[in-house]
Amino acid sequence: MFKKFNPQGDIVSQVPIKSSVQRSIRNQILEQFPSVEPFIEDILPRKEKWILIKCHGHMNLISINYEQPIFFNLRTGPYFPSLRLLHAYPFLLPRLQVDKGAIRHILKGADIMCPGLTSAGARMDEELGSNRMVGIFAEGKEHALAVGVTKLSTEDVKNVNKGVAVENIHYLNDGLWKLSLGEQQS
Amino acid sequence: MASHSFSEERGTTCLTNQDQYPYNVIYCGNCSLPFEYCEYNGPEEFQRCLLWRRENYPELFSTYDESLLTDAFKNVSLADSLSKAVESNNNSSSKKKSPINPEVVIARAQRKGRKQVTIISGLDKTGVKLSEFSRVCKKQFSCGASVVTAPDMREVVEIQGPIFGTSRILVCNG
Ligand SMILES: [Zn+2]
Image (tube, rainbow over all chains, first blue to last red; front, side, top):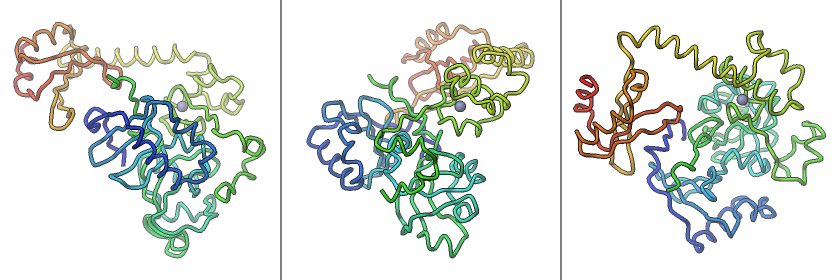
């Protein structure tokens, strides 16, 4: 989703978020990620400046104090955590582990194919349905390398073992990872 | 915390940290990724990642990392290797290009909505003064023009407005 993201052309506007809207965003995030409750004040501090960054394609990014965005969503869809946030709070998303060989491709933006999740180095410990938001981890690595949405249930991934298993939404070194808002503050 | 079921395998560091969220992940100052993904950069970039790690986190720079450093990088600092890279780039480009045909790129980029700007890069290598050039542009096109630093740290001239044809003529003549 951020493969070709270009801050100069793709950011439409950056506006402060009203406190009433902040509250509803916070509630939606708590509803989506109940486990984050003890940390919500660290992640989305009430007193700081919340910025809504609207991008082409109805993409919204949420930043605190113009720091790197921590959540993003499409239109009014569910919020995805950014990878930096997922690194800090790895329990935010259910995890799938790909084998080592898949890392290279994922870091180029490729979707996660079934065999990458069923081979020896891979792990799918949790039963998940399709259309679930997941963190993509990798064999031998501690930190997530992508955030995605399952296209097949984990059961189908095992049975079919062909084609796209998880859509790659956001990965290390993509446009969102590299985005820095500092220079556009004015 | 069913979603955290891998933790026992990832060793004690993780277990002792369990109540210490947020994790303080250390990112590579050279490539911005977590250390463990540095190796997926190009080989030369990875060497610079290792140098950065050796200089900034010696305690995390293992003997294994040391063994990955090639001879060319073993005894240099990151700054040295960077300036060397720049030098060799300059050398190759000045040898190959500048006498005959330095590469100037005129590109269009989109600003808010449908506004467009013209970005001219590569001029700095031709010996044209960028500030001088932007001043001429301002007069010629009666619009804003400025020297900005592009994301890849090269200086480019940015002209407000989609004026590719005319700016090309100016570049060719100037
Ligand atoms: Zn690195």
